[in-house]
Length: 412
View 1 (cartoon, one colour):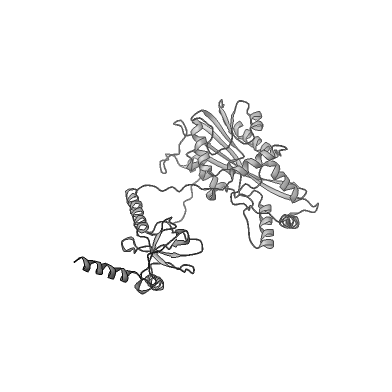
View 2 (view 1 turned 60 degrees about the horizontal axis):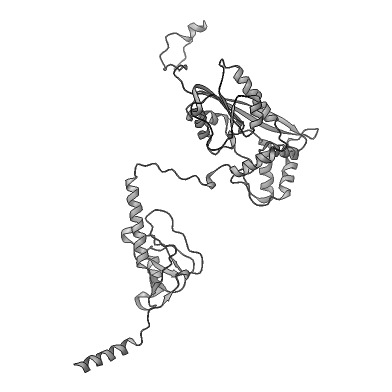
């Protein structure tokens, strides 16, 4: 019996002597191809050696895919039913694998990674079912922001060395004129501005704060809030208005002065035309600004009572477009857009825009105009003693009787 067992052992050794042990390859050179398959039909994840950058699986849609794993995988043979070409062709024909760049090498399986991906997808889907009625609010990333706040404050600090203030002075005169028509005395004003010294000199007892994302204002602490010439740079103008309303006492007044959509219309058009001629495309160089109708609707969204939006345009004459750009820099109104070009701008672009500006808008004396549209927003914090409109159809007197005229009916 012992001899028979020895003979069987020798025979088994001879049969297995020609077989190679499974080899292991570093996973650094292995990339997983995402399997676009319904979860309950998902086959094992196949990995293909690839020299390029790995594709990133798309979010959601029941996709099971592995980007990169620091595991060692078992290498399988390249003949018979495990032939890489046959497996790739079969997966492609069945629609399980998306088109990929040229791949080569051995195909292997990583069962643990595939099971882990399926478990993670089950967990995410279970959470989504439990949050079916929740509101999804995406995070505000830098790409979604209109204004680059770091660049904005850098422009303002640079302009503080020799500021140009004629537009601020004009806005202050308009605000004082509006306050003079209000039959009310204000004892606790607040001003939101990046020019604290200028507005503090106009309202000596005012609490002046910077126009940051979160305003440094206490709730119901002021009877007057002025948002001075900085709301057009806000990433969240409605949020700024809501914070200002919360800082107001009942029946408190809110006033805002900002640039409107007609500001720098000439410069905007000339820059766009010059860049299109020079580079065949456009870049974000002048900040988009709201129209008066839209800005009035923002007051209603913020919860102000009796909202009013009005404005007017100022036409300023400059010696040349370069003098205009110098003044914009001294105002702190240079471009601070998040989407502004970050590469070197050719000098020919500004020279071409200046020549086009001069040819299109220049007068006989060689000067050019620049339009600044100023919009003023007025709203009141809601209170019980404020007048309210009556319901339609509740009138008790005829308008014709009040005007002393004869009413003429209209045809149907």
